[in-house]
Image (cartoon, rainbow, N blue to C red; front, side):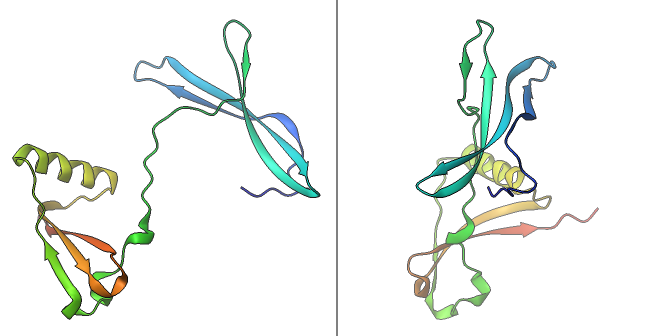
Length: 142
């Protein structure tokens, strides 16, 4: 995160994030303050979380929430690869339920609205062990 000394002054209560459950109950929260920290001659902009528990205990711990990180740097456009160096690797699912679970979660995470029939894994030799996942899709006509 980058800050501007001109526009991002140090201060309290710059932002508040609340986590609410399905019944609109407050599960957790953090109030954020901003600060400029000088360390070894370098100035660094910081956003610092703050929470005060019911017993008055203050903490600057980050929120503990699950995060899904999709690092796409390992992907390579399959159509840009030399076809002679592409090999197909069979994906073995334990059963139909595991395959169904994989496809449902894959489409949910990537917001794919087409019906997916099969999953294949392709190795592209000239890209130094990079893998490409391609989902063969059947587009549903409505």
